[in-house]
Length: 405
Image (tube, rainbow, N blue to C red):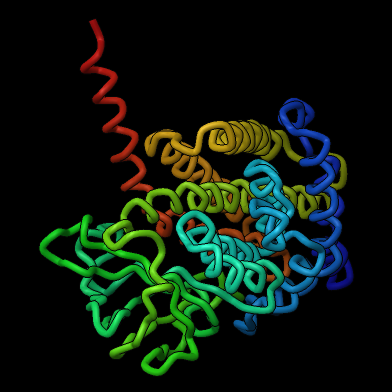
């Protein structure tokens, strides 16, 4: 292909998503959810997708892309109107996440991290804390982070070393967090620390910490395989004074807050997986059309047929579990894990297959297929690795086996 043709293909995929919608999948969506998807798709096409290559190439933070989404009112989909949200369903949030991730994985990571930072404050914060912090996170006037992972404590929250020692009617916070999304830019962080290490999970508490407070510092953003438009950094807490009013819930309630919050975060990751699969699939169709015209080889069509089937299945699973969460926030960890593992594996598998199918064209940054592959890798790691998800699923299967006659 000539350079002019390459440029034409790079933009073609943006118009494919309406064509690629599956009516059978959309049957489960409400009119409101379809309207929000249509709105998000338009904003993504105008504001997010055109910036995505530069964000990836230059490692620039996706500020403008996120602000475009937030200014349209999409930043607070699952939050009540009185806090600046729109009171929409978790399904609506998932379908909007799909649209963003299909165009720019990094922007979708910034988008979901804002939700993840605000959500623990919603479920466990006092009313003054909700009013103080949530509206600015939803509007994008402040950035937020969830500070859980430590150098020696990843998925095992019970082994946290960051301490919160009661002192003077508040707490003194000391410790190091790592792999913190938006950690170098966050104005507000929800930090999980232990008030009693001997109690393990029962000793973990959650606190809202402002980055401007004395003793809060951060490291330089890490260089990463993908998600270049979203920063990841270490955060350090050195004798940080935290008011008691900034504790979320009771002392020792941190574990339950984590478990309530990961439901939303794993839905986010699953939606990213579906979106990245869709993005890789649509880009592949655009490139094949330009290479072969209307006579795409049968072996390529056979491969595309398998991806289309898996993407439809992934979307159905994502939407069904999100709908279940709206009906029952206590949906089991195994069911949530099944969705997260299957959908993020889907994103990786389709992007990997697309780079192989396109050969040298799949390796060109211009088309964004290799970016989908790099961005998809981390979705299988964060919000509970897919190995952890299989463990949760297997425990539920073991319980079922025990109940068999």
